[in-house]
Image 1 (tube, rainbow, N blue to C red):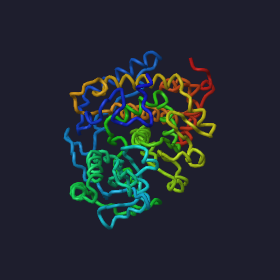
Image 2 (tube, one colour):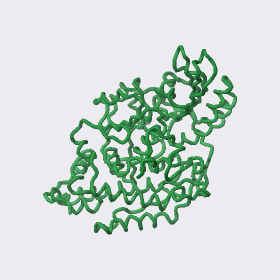
Image 3 (cartoon, rainbow, N blue to C red):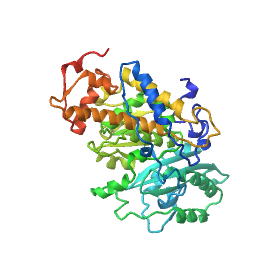
Image 4 (spheres, rainbow, N blue to C red):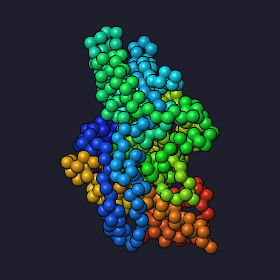
Length: 458
């Protein structure tokens, strides 16, 4: 990949060269029918697998398992009613970040000013931030506008955002937030449109203590993941960018996400595209097997120094930050990702940070699927629908195949896990042995690794 095509932390989401030249060109609400996609996925994977003597490595799944929220009989509801709170945060030259306005008036917004405006944002003109506030999730759009005003030191900075019970539909509010922050920068104090937007999109307020960062209530966790992971929605282009940025090392993230490790991505502002990396990493764990348990790591999205205590009590999470100090807090994470550099002090994770021949093969499969099934990737800019379900379908099928094989072996009489099993699910018998042993320990799957699993792979 040429240097000009590499996405880095300073590349605005709308300006990346490569598969998608404009997010807006593919961002209208729509869901392309996938009636032929299953056959395409199977054809691509079978072609790749034949090179390695593997058959039926991944069984394709039904379209309904990847439907967008509000999708019924092919129709889409473009007006999600999910907002708990709408707000404006501003930077004051004397007081720092301040909450300028919010609705409803009885909403607890303490601390939101530090989550909705990332540390270091003054260095960029625009950004967007996903974050977690108590048991709620937020999205805010930031803009820095030059002004000829001594009291504001030449710059006026604001963020306009919303809070919701789940993060899965927040991106539907992106266009409004972007337009509104610009309007408020030009016309401070004009909140009429925000009031109308809140009334149109407000949802039922949660009955639990949604603003507490600590809760042992199982119902709260259900609210956090109110939509099953396999039905998660996605901003246009985020999976393609994720794949193009990390390349075959996406499978290092896949393994560590399945192992329920604490992962934090670092980037200087802008942080928006890095929030998408959190989102995509969470999506790598999707599967259908109830025996394994439907779960996903806690997506904290953007975090700063004030979140360190909360992160210290979390056993598994994925987050991103603009605070370089997190790298030195090794007790808070298992894997620290600085741009494309993977950092860990844990020997087991260090073993998993190298890619294997099997990872390269799976990466080739994904690239083939990307080129065949993403309309924007193929340069069809007349097609205004964005469908990246090929990405999630691939990982759901990959995880289903992996866990199903492990469960089948655990139910067998001898429980013997062999080199043939490793090949059958597309893993490297040598380099992926640590991963498979950690995986069965993490999920409590009872298998026995035989001596041939230690043999060198062909």
